[in-house]
Length: 62
Image (tube, rainbow, N blue to C red):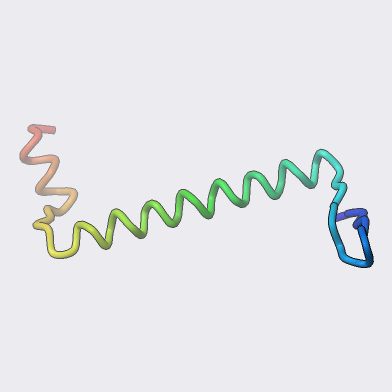
């Protein structure tokens, strides 16, 4: 990853990335948010009843 860091008053203030690097970071953040949402949903479900794949197929008549 190639990034240029610009300072203001001696502190790092801005970063310039290639568009390709920006897209990689954006994709990684989206995947992270999806993972967080999945974990939250699983936690909220807690001890909810489940069925196996075979049971689901049988229930749906597949």
